[in-house]
Length: 212
Image 1 (spheres, rainbow, N blue to C red):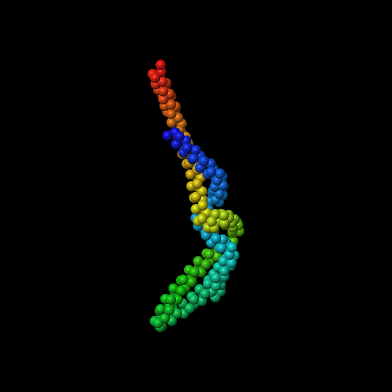
Image 2: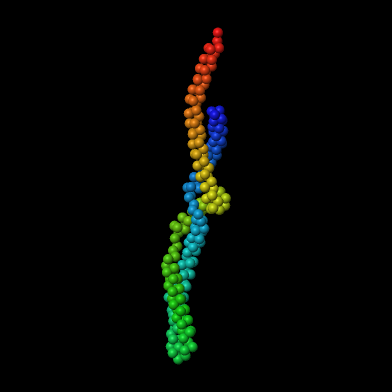
């Protein structure tokens, strides 16, 4: 009935009022996370990339040194192994027992040649990129601040964002429900007034009949 509906609306408004007291704080937290927009596993990816960038000079120097030892320098490992392979090949025609070692030497030479090629490419690809390094450090710090504030892990931050989305969405839906109830009450009021008027007329008619 109308009385019950009014009480329900009052209770809903009271609940909404309490929720609105926390709304600004929830929205502030949500906007803070949304502004950074962290992705699942992003902190681990950044950490791995930072480790490489922070040691890029060392990696580049080591790769160049390894490539020289394997291939580029005079008396390199590949060069010496090539000499060994040629000697085994020359004498394998005399002693067939050397056919097995010859096969192994060929395989080893092929592996070392491919390894030296890979390390040569790696030494050229590794770059000292200070702009990327600074950008990722700033990004890592931003994510760290969120992790420190919202549970200690990136998973906890993302879960907090989902919780805040649900709370803010519920507030909007709750207001819609209140509006629906108020519209329902408005539609009942004219009916109640019409019924009251009808009852009043009936009472007057009955009073006339009972009168002198």
